[in-house]
Image (tube, rainbow, N blue to C red; front, side, top):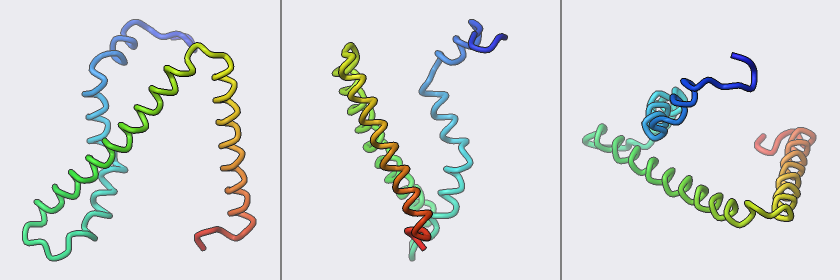
Length: 119
């Protein structure tokens, strides 16, 4: 396979069942597993049924992620529809993105020069 070219079998794999692939990736993500093992026990308190409480905390976490990422997706869709065919809109979004990167770079430099914000 040459760089920049894809095969038909790869396209079929990528296009097929994105929800199932995303679910499997999320369930097998070691960062998520470590989060639940490291963080959730701190919130167990005096639970009589720790398994049920962990399931409830996990469900709350999933619900919050659905709300957060769903909102981001809706906003991204609105921007996509609004600026899709507009060259002026694309330029505006490029300036906004560039400005955000400059602000983030400034915060990073200020953090390094100031000895760290959190320290």
